[in-house]
Each structure stands twice: as structure tokens, then as C-alpha cells.
Amino acid sequence: MNSISKNLTLAIFISASTSSAFATTGYFMHGYGVKAQGVAGTAIAQFQDALTIANNPAGLSWIGDRVDVGATVFSPDRSATISGNGANANGHYDGNGRKYFVLPEVAVNKQINDQVALGLAIYGNGGMNTGYKNNPFQAFGNQGTAGVDLTQVFISPAVSWKYTKNQSIGVATNILYQRFEARGIGAFAGFSADGSNLSNRGKDDATGIGARIGWAGNFFDDRLTLGATYSSKINADRFKKYQGLFAEKGDFDVPESYGIGVAVKVTPKLTVATDVQRIHYSDVGSVGNKFDVAQLQQGNVFGTQKGPGFGWEDINVYKLGVSYQAHPKLTLRAGYSHNDQPIPDSEAFLNILAPGVVRDHVSVGATWNVDQHQELSVAYTHALKDDVKGPISAAFGGGESKIEMSQDILGVSYGYKF
Image (cartoon, rainbow, N blue to C red; front, side, top):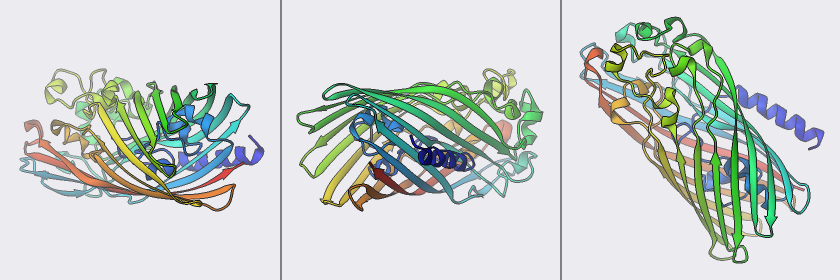
């Protein structure tokens, strides 16, 4: 990698580290790379740029030497409603303390020889953010604005080996940087093992390391491409400033995920692809543990080994994308994805802080080849509004809480092919 590329990746990483993200399949991105976003994230068997490192690193063997730089703007609309509550918490609460989020990405690939390709990607894995100026938990003694802010960024060096003419295997190291902040829930200190490190402690960060491995195969004169990928769980450092909030004294890991993909070149101009992915949110205690008042009364309070989490369940994600070469210089894209609901009805109350409820995404995108080296891409995704509603424990006044969210996502990128 030359000095320009090194400086560029460093600049993008610094920018990404100070930006907040809000992803869509739970708190993961629905697509990594602007081209992938245009087909609703269908990218396990469709290799379009160097951001394939984040989808399937085996794809590096099929894209040639290139650099890709992009940015995605998220505009989520999140809110909560409490009704029938005996503690006087009833009301509609707007969670849009911040309306726009910018998430940069950069990736580079270098073909070392006919068999080996080396790459590097820096990108946002996802995150969550809420900001309630009118605190939905004020009736329980909490003051000020309420919400959370989680950002996860990966630095991923990768290598791909084309071990036969039509098959490759790739490995990426996922170096994690994440940052978190919680506000406006300090009055719940009585339900915490460390009430002084529960809320309003400012930003805290943590790091970790994991791996992604992928396989790709092209068959029938490149008319059929198959892909498979697996990302390991990342055991991250603890958020010490929030060891009274997250289970296991502030532990917040990245769950494992895996998937398979198929891409079929129906005609020389038309490609149809589909992916199926699974994310194991329940394996991370801070995310998967249930919020159970009976457990609190038995000593499993916030911050303990079996302390409450957000109660998220494992999900499957189903994606379908279509790419069409409308002109030698223009590629058009469209896609749709659907994922299971990670948040059960019983967990709606605590998830006012993290209403990652959207399940359906509709995407369109395009790439314009400026010349033989340069290309510009754009993608737009709308995450359809969805909601989850469920009962509030009598210990908090009973009634019902409802959380809902929708999103608009716009990405632009520039690619240079050497």
C-alpha cells in the first residue's frame, strides 16, 4: 500500500471513530459498502469492491487492484409510547435527539500474484443511538435527557488465496474499537451492583479482536457464484464506566454471525443474488439476557453475571438483490431484505433505549463508470417502520410500552481501479 492510501485509511478511521452509527439488522449494518447497500446487502457471493472484506474476504481474489472510499448517511426515526402506567409515565416520547449520522468506509485490495490478494478495510460494523429530551423514565426518578450511544468500528486486514482456478478462501482479522455512553437512567442504581457506574459517566471505549473467514467459487463459466462466510464472536474489553449497567461487569462483546450466498448471471447483463445470514445476539449477555424483575429480586441485578440485558434473540436475515448493466458505463441495482425481530414483546420497556425493531429494507443503487479507472456509486435504502409493544412489569406501574423505528439511508462512494 502506498503512502497516500495509508494516510487516507488513517484519516477515515479517525473520522469513523468519532461518528455514531445506527444499523438496521438489530445493530449490524444491513450492507457493507455502498454497492452492497444498493442490493440490500446481498454480497456473500457477489464481489463488487474491496469492501468485500466485510462481507466475504474470499472475494478479494476476484476484484483486482482497487481502492474504495465512501460514506453513508443514516437518518433514523425512533420513538416510544407508554400507556396505562400507574406510575404516571404515560406519554409519547421522541427519541431523535440526533437526526443524522455519517459513517465513512475505506478499503484497498492488491493482487500480489495469480493466487494471493491482500486487502485492508476500515468500516463501521454498526451501533445504536437514542436521545430522549423528554425522559421516558422520569416518573421513576430519572432526570435529564435519556438514551444510549454505541459505535463499533472494524479495522480488517485480509488475505485471499485462489487455490484453484475457480475457488478461493479468505481470512480477515477484525480489530474492534467500540465506544458507549448511557444517560438519564441513574435512578435505577438500586437495581445495580455498581450504581455509580450505571449512567451519565461520559463516553467509554473498549477494544477486541476476532476473525472472519470466507469461501467463494465460480462455476459454469462464471454464470454461478457461491459463497460462505463466518465471523467469530469478539470478546471485547469491558466498559469500566458502565460495569454497573452491562452484565458481567460491563462486558459487551460482538456476537458471531455466518451466512451463505448465491449469485446467478441470468444473462450477460443481469445478475440475481441471494444471501441468508444468522446473527447470534443471545450469546452476548449484555444483549441477550432478559429484563426480568423476578431475577432482580433474586440478586441478578444490572452488572452481575446474570444481570439484565436487552433480551435480544438470535435472528436470520434474508436478502435478495438484482444488478443490471443498463449501459457500458451504468450499472443499476435494487434489493430487498427481511430479518427476524430481535426484540420480543416482553422486552419492549427496556428497549426504549435501543429500539432496533426494523425488519424490512428496500434498496436501490447505481454505479457510473467515469472512465476505465474511476467509478462513482450511490445507494438509497428505506427501512420500513416497524414496532414492538409489550407489557410493563407491575413493579414499574404496569401498562404497556411501544417502541418503533424507521430509517432512510443514503450512501455514496468512489472507486479507483488500477
